[in-house]
Image 1 (cartoon, rainbow, N blue to C red):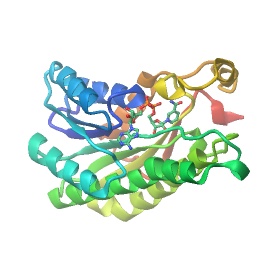
Image 2: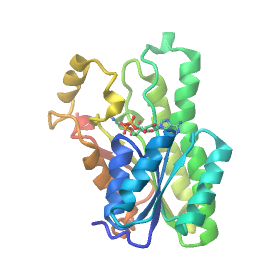
Image 3: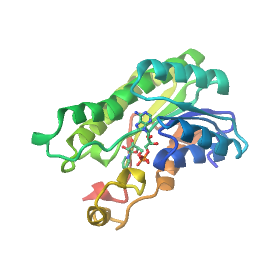
Length: 250
Ligand code: NAD
């Protein structure tokens, strides 16, 4: 229990994988949770399941790349759940697999839009809501180990995640005076539906790139996110937090 009773949280991409585990852990810690995702049926079902844990929860179906939809969703969250204290900008996609010299241009633009521009748009609207309430807050942006190093055939993904880290570091300085802490979380490879399309042989080879010799679980990432959301992390801002089973250690 991360002691989040009375807090209101947004989790984008909150119906699957890491986002779902985060939404569940924040709710288990007492927070009211707005679940944002593309999938309309799933956001309703997830919110209903969270309400059964005894917290307030709403589902909002939207595309996080849509500036106006994001602004409306922040407004709806604040009105229906009574404020905004925590935001986890987690929605993301893998994108095409191709070398940079052959990378499809439309695919590049889409990955940058979903994995980087959306974090800027969501964070922008969330900061404005937190600032006007005057109580501060905690924003956690989902980066990746590929926000620190490269990875073959994933240039758009790696560029977007490096961008998320730079945006996070900059925004943390800019909004510290507003009492808003902003951090990035960098998971290693985590067993979620995002990896479903990956060749099982490639997945197996990836396990040995982690010192712990396995992929991570969504719950292992959620624990770090919930800590960053909590008052225990009061001195944490502007940092990239690896949760990668040792991937970046050698
Ligand atoms: P996932 O596919 O299980 O979940 C992603 C969710 O985001 C889905 O529910 C999807 O519908 C939603 N989404 C995608 N595009 C959206 C959009 N435009 N608008 C609204 N919602 C949208 O993936 P996951 O593995 O849980 O990934 C979550 C985050 O963690 C992503 O940012 C991903 O890049 C990052 N990450 C994942 C891994 C991994 O190995 N799985 C590693 C490092 C970082």
